[in-house]
Image 1 (cartoon, rainbow, N blue to C red):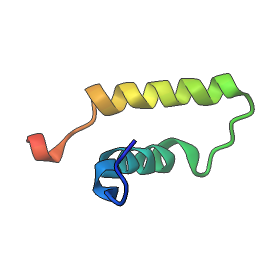
Image 2: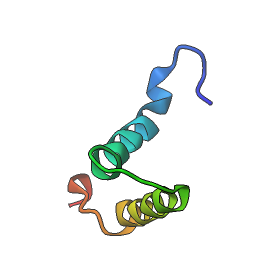
Image 3: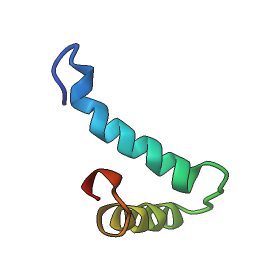
Image 4: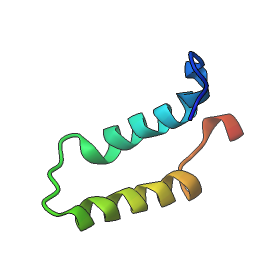
Length: 57
């Protein structure tokens, strides 16, 4: 948890969740929990291993 009134402590994870919702959640319907959990796991793998990161060249 971040410290009181230190919103920038959370900025990295807030950015991640924003990208996650934009990429896999909005506009799609998940009928069972396992389907959603699988999509999140696949996205995390993609985000950490395959995504092009402009700041790292």
